[in-house]
Image 1 (cartoon, rainbow, N blue to C red):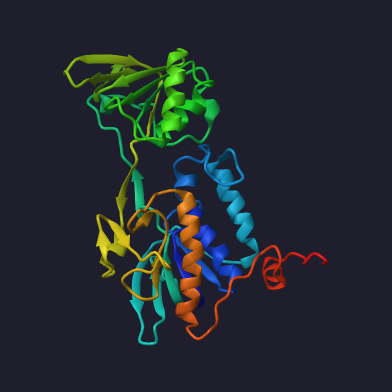
Image 2 (image 1 turned 135 degrees about the vertical axis):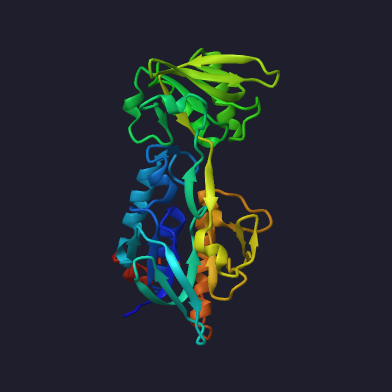
Length: 344
């Protein structure tokens, strides 16, 4: 027995969750599929306590808190949530609808498919260094789930992107000292974050190192630090207690790569009117898509979800007149959201 729905959303990260909301405002039902055991995507899996600073109206919000707020926001729309499974079969039928089957054998009959799979199936890029295998339990971490676990520790943070910089700033007052290690002096993160980290370095709370990791140093199996080699091939040992690795994710589109979609450098090409892919009725939003001027911000994904919802509605109901209604004033929107329309 197939689950019939207006749209199947592949990916239950922040952008996939917000897609439920935008579809719901248009009266469209959705079912979510995600390979992870919980909703939230990277935010929940890799950095649940990471602060995010570029969500409108929130000067700062934790990644998991953002996910929790999105789940609260989409609650009125009663979306199906199918976690811990991947899409294994995908087929467009003669009537324009889609048959989608997951690895757990759940079958969907969907009017449209929206791919919001972030970077696909993702895993953090691992630290591989000589000497790590000699330690029973090397203190290497790829996400922060409890900031207090690093209180008073000497932290070695590896990376030069936003995650590494954000956690350097966030943990500067928790750790006894932070060593930020990046392969070069230039950082990939936001300029304002780079300035704040350099200010922490000037204040003596952070030490900045450039070089490649060559070896993990231990004493009787106990981690002591990392050996790094700079561009002049000089080697230095940076001592510490715990290591946080933020080298990004290794993307794998998985079965999506075999769906005959137009792919550019492991990303799905879309238009910028409705974020439809090369297959009519299949849309892609968030980090997994690409188009001229694409910027990988959660904010951009939210915008894409709003326009994709109208594209989905037009695809499923081509003869239906489309018009914009505002959640502040529309009785229809209030009914769908389960709120009372204020008196005039």
